[in-house]
Length: 117
Length: 350
Image (cartoon, rainbow over all chains, first blue to last red):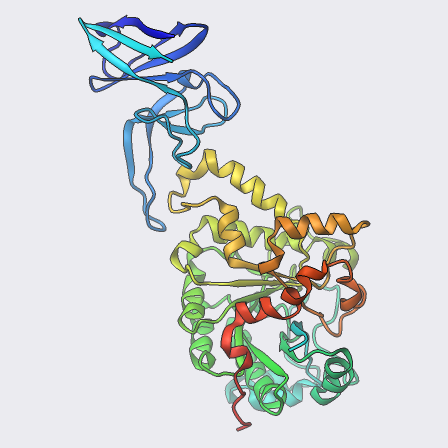
């Protein structure tokens, strides 16, 4: 329980990530263009280490036979079954109720801190 | 209203009776002895013998409808392979001729029959023209195509047919039976079956393929009011494809971003199933489970498949349908699918 400093800001450059362990659970820290996000390293599908997956974009909902690729760099794809999650919310792209657990992140004194409740 | 039968296979007594309804340029091909040249799959003859019990509308009314308490029947004919005939112009001409023959001889002289606009999908343009020609006729309550097809029915080439269905607020009925004939793909995913037994048992594969295709190609995103009635295919296979499809969609949706809902939602909102021939589950509870899975209280329609009762009596077949569902299956669901047109008076015979 509580606030944990998990990295220095310069350890995780934009587009980068770091896997940390806090209170017995693994958490992935992601830097998206200077904004930091913390996601539990567990896919809600079958508990795969989702934070090890590729970070990319996805096709946005569109009209039939149209393709709009978006959210580049914001989508985390689980390495086991390719379920995709928005890193900024933890929500899956197919159902907002299906989500990776997220944790609040603070930046202070060039340090990244995660609060686990 | 006691019973509505959505799949009665009315038959032609002889092709020479249909020939006058076929455009003059191709009439000679229909009028010839034995009827028009039709590619067949080799398992069951196309058309009917003269003495067939489904070839006389008055006889069928008396001996089937009146005898069994059926108030209204939708006619689906007996030519399942029209959409896979190699010659699209001959197929379209036969479709037009059969439609007019049906209106003139079955639908308009009676108030207990409704017709289907038979179209041959290998030429979508002529299929659309036929829907435009007859789409406003109150005697026609649906568009009918064989599920035997040159290609999966979600392909964009077929979309104008669906646009035409929606334009006239007509459901689309598919009927198995032409699989393997003419320009059809083999009747099973692994190749051509050897016997009628094997062939007929395999036919729901067609529906599985078409459902997959229509959902992934966005047919119901483009045509949100389109309804599709799957005749003669049973029901037990549907939960499998719904839930396999839903599971895969979560990971694979990015390929078809217009598929915005879980596939089972499109399936249950747009497809309707018929009772003939309902699978013979050894225990009633098996059927009850599946009926719950497929939301049968909305999606299941009574059909007789008359006169092809080689698989059993269609009323006996539904004995295990729960009482609470029976009224919906026998009457209410058909009224909901086909709407007011089902009860509208037919135009007088021309």
